[in-house]
Length: 88
Image (cartoon, rainbow, N blue to C red):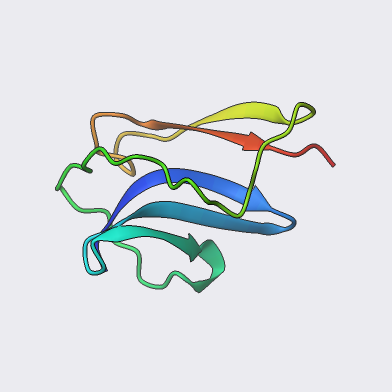
């Protein structure tokens, strides 16, 4: 599948990628542990609205983090992902 990433988040001990799936032409959530043979393409990601119903709903006690990636593994115009995480 080709997916335009929208956000990365964790729920309990699992990490997820939410993105626009070109195959299904809709937002989908992917468990990182089940993703095989990931390939970064030269094609830039489109801009899509975040899914309204997700597995993770932030609360007032959550921290916001920013993860920055080297350009060679995130060749799109943006190379930072901001996500809200729950402190343990």
